[in-house]
Image (cartoon, helix red, strand yellow):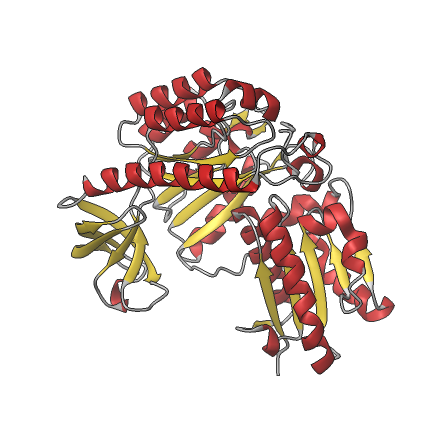
Length: 440
């Protein structure tokens, strides 16, 4: 019988993409995917340390694997990703962990597994990029969704926001050569993938030779079989009029932009070292909505940053009221090791952080509901990805990234379906198919 692998992923879409690449490598070695850790011969925990919550969840999951290892002594336990990159010594305190590797060198997974057989416990966490990293786009991903795929085009960050650990765990900015991006997209299209997500820590800063992000969007749009293109995460300092015009001018590029403001207070933005002002952010949004009137806007927000006053928070609320968001992700500030903000007095009480989080969430929720209700009665093109978690309705997304619960059977999966919107909540739409436009 073939050996099986199980990968538990915490964190961002880039971690998901890294996990799919690792799964692809394991598939090439003859492994099959296990549905549960108990079925696996190797368990890989791909960790995230951007915030304290996923960091703690990863540690909890790793600790719980000790019981499984006792029952299955031959089980190989590996820990990958951002947490080992910053604190490999802590990971190695877990006696049941056999392999530890960081964000730079998962491409060497087959060689690392061979070393475990020969050496027992192996730790390989590098602090800078390795030559093998150029091979990452050439690895075939094991796709959880056969119609949608992530393609990492830019890794690392040079911004050094005072709260963010990414420059320490992912390194400096580096962009993937456009010819490698196109080769990967073409391979995915040949496998039946219809929607591509171009990923980068700061994707707007993609730059390789004379090619920028706008150029790359035009190039990817020419790949036959690809129907939709998205990109994330944008940075307000890097988002340009050229990118906005590419969204408008390229039919395949979805009118959706994730542009995190983090705060609406200039004082806090300066303490965060975000590199733009409140006024500059609002002007970017105004420019985007003038060029792409139908665009959906989402963003990330941090409440309770050290020194944030009620006035600072009210300025965040007013920024949200002025820009109007379709979706927002709000987080309470948590100090991360190695960052400058970790040295700031964390003087906002927990209950205040929690109140501000709920208040900001409610405002964004209200905006989202108002915008979603405007869709009732309209016909939208929805790419049907599969069944919802409850299994009673189909699930898909509109061009501008609105989740939609759709009535229908599995014959619609993989189709782009015209759906009449019948109901709306702040978080998703509901609808009935009008007609199937394309079908596998």
